[in-house]
Image (cartoon, rainbow, N blue to C red; front, top):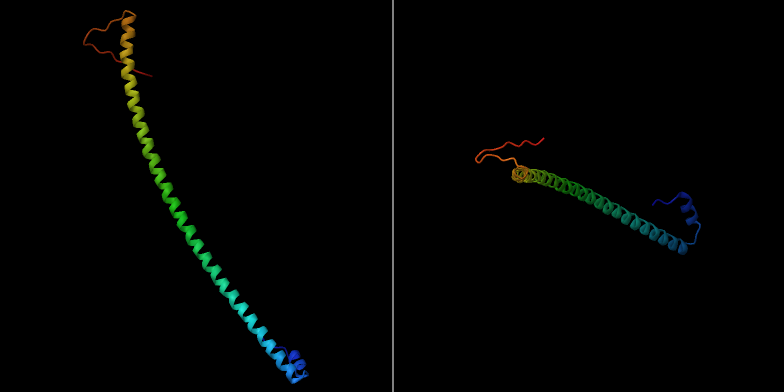
Length: 124
């Protein structure tokens, strides 16, 4: 930290013993201030490093979330396909049961189907 010309003029008017004390005091203030400035700069670097690390973590988190969403989408697609297949199986089973029940209902109402003959049932 530079010393002003005014301070030097004032210091020259002070007794030599006091001048030495003021000079030592001034040196101490300058050293303390420099240490504080160095510490501040060190803290700035630390904050900058932390900021960069956080950016890296955020990017890693984003990539992880994208992978998880992709897995979920594939799983949902697979589940949808399997539920569709199951629905078809249940539908065919219900049709088979409905045909059996229909034959019984027709017999009950005195309508017989000749043995070995088939009837076609269409659902709309």
